[in-house]
Amino acid sequence: MAMSDNKQNMLKGDLYHAFTPDLVQERTRCRDACQRFSDAREISRRRQVELWRDINGDTSPMPFQLPDPEQDAALFDDDPWVEAPIRIDYGTNVRLGSNVYLNSNCTILDTCLVSIGSRTLVGPDVSFYSGTHPLDPQLRNGTKGPETGKEIHVGEDCWFGGGALVLPGVTIGRGSTIGAGSVVTKDVPAFHVVAGNPARIIRKIETKMPRESLPEAPQAPRP
Image (cartoon, rainbow, N blue to C red; front, side):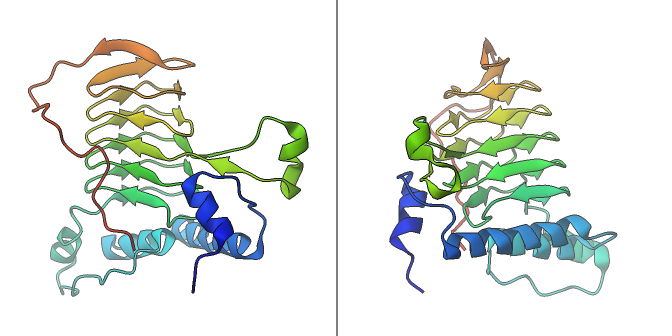
């Protein structure tokens, strides 16, 4: 099915209307998938990954199931680990790298792409908001007016303290730490600690990790 011009505008960060039937249907699909994920109890690692891929719209084939539960779980060692409950708008605009950890009560408004690099750890109650609205209330016009958004990119090996909030259009460099409760309103350079509201640079991180140019966004394929 061809993507509507309205949805293309959404993904590009242009003005679009969120309450068209197709986008309402996509958010409903994701809401129901998130609810199934959050309601699941005492499930295998395989089932956890299946439920996450249902949210994410990832249709790549699962590996053949092994009879031993521990060996089967090991097949998913590099998959993201996501704790319930979680709240996401669309799911299909979220990209998680390998070994990413999302703690409970994570909220992702994925109006535009939200990418989180490999080995990044996200504490509880952290939010990523890629969606925004016009400032002019006449244009904004409640549910009848247009919305917009900007992509969020988080590099590899980052750490988010609980309750942090990332706003639209922010890029967070590799190896950075975001203090608990921080509101990140602008880009964060690689290997730095930021904290506060708005978040400000606290210090540079000294590390033995190589700092040569590496991809900041995960390289997970689109489903």
